[in-house]
Length: 274
Image (cartoon, rainbow, N blue to C red; front, side):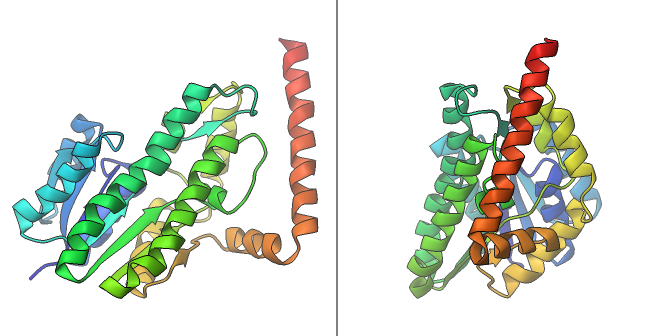
C-alpha cells in the first residue's frame, strides 16, 4: 500500500516541490493551501504526471481547516503516514516599526499553523502507532539576523516545538524533524510584510543567490527525514553559521552587531533621502 503525505502551503514553492518529490517516490499526496486557484492548478499538473494527488483549501490559521486536511487524507486514502507543516510567511522590520498586528499575523501562521498541524496529526499517529512530522522552519530559527525579530522568533519557536516533540512522541513510534534552510528561490517574498521599502528587493537578491534550488532542497528533506534526522540544514553555509554561533558565540554576536550597525546607517540614509 502506498504511503500518504499531507503538505500545507503546497500550491507552489517548496511545498509543490515536496509534493513532486514524494510523488516520484511513490507516495500519495494530500495537499492544502489557502490559494485555492493555484492549488487546483498544482493538483491538475501533478495528476497529469501520474501521481495520486488530492487538494483541499487549508488556511493554517483555522483549526478546523488543518484538522480537515488530516481527516481528508484518511477519508480519501485510508491512512496518513507523514504530515509536513510547510505553510509560512515573512516579516522584516525593527522592533519599534513592525506593528503588533504584523507580529500576531506571523506568529499565527508560522508558529500556530505548525502547532495546529502537529496537534491534528499527533492524535492520529498515536492511535496507529507510527507516523512522521516534518516542520519547515528556517535558518532564521537558529540565527538572529537584526531587523527580523518577528520572523526569527516565530521560526525559533518552531525549532523548539520540534525538538520537544522529537523526544515526546518517540515512544509512540512517531519521528519528528525540523528543516532550517537558508534563503532560496521560492514565493516567500510575495507574503513579505516590512517597514523597510527596500527589504523585498534585498530578500529577492538573497534568494536568487542560493546555491540550492527548491527542488534540490525538497529532495534533501525527503532523504534526510527518511533517516529520521532531527535537524535538517540543507545549506552548507547555514551549517557553518550555526556551528559558529554554538562554538564561538562572542564572534558570532559581534558579527550580528556589525550587521545591525550597517542597517542603522542604511535606515538613516533612507530617512534623510525621504
